[in-house]
Image (cartoon, rainbow, N blue to C red; front, side, top):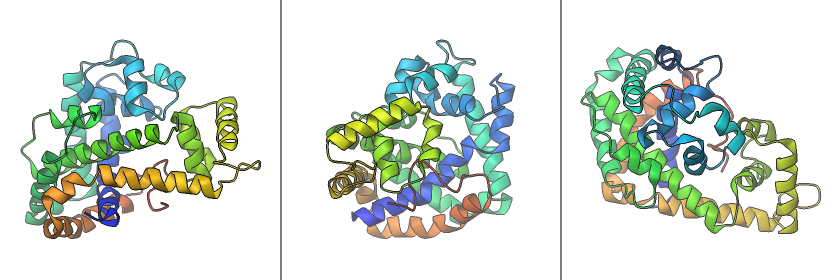
Length: 286
């Protein structure tokens, strides 16, 4: 499967997954569980880590990679605020309510969305989970019955499958969590202030920049070098390669059909105004 197609599928599915972290319906469900919803991080960490059980801050820091340990410790208590089984049930309720609000009832009940859900599920079920803890945890969950929830769960498995592979690519490239962010910002994935959401201090950011300068990834002014661009390009290519298996299993024709079917829901998600225009994933930039 070509890298451009693999990346396109990620770009199409990521917003459909990410609505969970920004939708008011999701904050309602999180508040009902007792989470502070004055900011999005308590529910973000709860929703995303719930398939892992109750891993605690050390486990979440390891699996999520790019967040500073201090930030994770602030939002992930040693004991969860609600049992993971309750969080998972609320997560599906949040997605159900959000999709009905954002995509619309007609789309949720449409045969096109049901077809998209079936295709996405086939791809997700072909995603290998060896060495991919977040993908494995989500793949182990029972499938919901409603097609729009199947679509969301498939999108979640596939994005975590890609994300787990991306962390492997970063490790091979010798980029620790903060170096990964500094180098990504340097190639223009998003402005540096966007990456402040990951909780690293100015001193930690500066130290990472110094380490990358010593490696020749950045120059003395903090700009990316040709060596740095090549390193980041290799990381992204390796990430695409590690994310290709589900789409190869689905096949080019069905993958193209899924891409076509996702166009409308993608536009609805982007047009909802819920998702930030700039993000730490660099979607649309690399």
